Image 1 (spheres, rainbow, N blue to C red):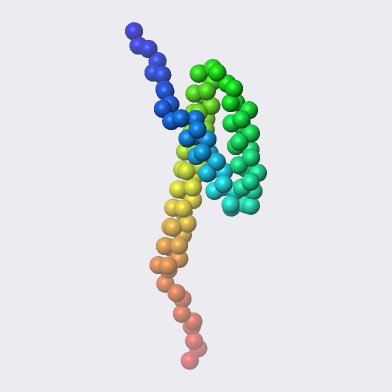
Image 2 (image 1 turned 45 degrees about the horizontal axis):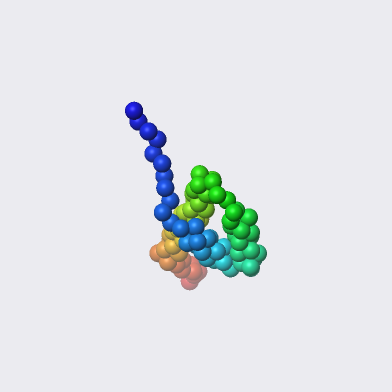
Length: 101
């Protein structure tokens, strides 16, 4: 009989919390709302600090990790697009002005 695989998260909640805070600060630097974003992350973690159900805790950890990885993937794609765009601009041959001599 095949049993479903149980995913256990070995990363401590405190480590995930700090990663989320760092990411909130990083994202907030783009739009000037880093303090608000960090407060929001803190509120979410504090509102669930008394949770004792292991299943729910693991679900919340999984959600936080998913958020971090999704943002990292999005950021990597954005950086690749910018790099590709800058390479395209640098390899483009400059047009010379046509003169009517």
